[in-house]
Image 1 (spheres, rainbow, N blue to C red):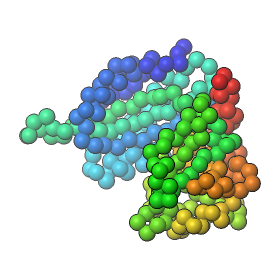
Image 2: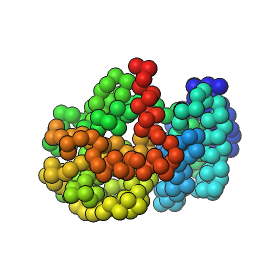
Image 3: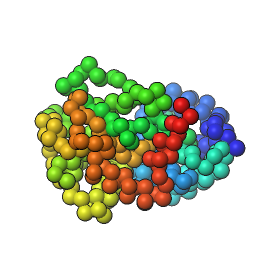
Length: 292
């Protein structure tokens, strides 16, 4: 048994190998990379969550760029699940989760008459939930770079040190809010979720999960163009991403949202999410901090 991902197995270009070997190959691939696509799913109880949706998003990008891996979506799904099952069996303790990442990289030709190469890699990583655990109960701080540029570049924080996570909320050229770095953003007003126009954002699988849960719970959703000023009237807000699913927002530009964190709607969505996956991932994340 292990808690070190170097002992995990990984897949690169048709070969399954120890991650320690794969890491060296990945370094060489990245050194000659001319770009590519990747996606990441996570596990709950050792089972991948919505892996197929993640792979569909990956293949949409590959199709857009006319990149042929020689593998079908079913191939990548089978390989990914096999690696997750094998690597999960190696983990010490039953409460650890992991991510599984698929990367498709186009390499620069080594000679003028060579064709670009395509490298496919799939690997698993242990999910460090301590990095965002406190944010489930304390929330994250959102800032808008055009208002507080001095916060640009701040790290998202480390739960073990007690640092508060700080995320930038971006806007488009017309001043309409879009998304946070690495996460989709939504706010709640009068019991209804306000979703920034999806034509201005990269819709994540977790964002779609939020919308499905909202429909199940009969929570209304309004998709539209929202500006920064409207955020200060919000009752609550949250961000969604694969690693943590959903985190409440405590403040925007230092202005607190609502009377408590998480807010009522955010709490309902988190509760339903836990029911769907059959794991209390919030409690497990908080329990990971008990050894501090």
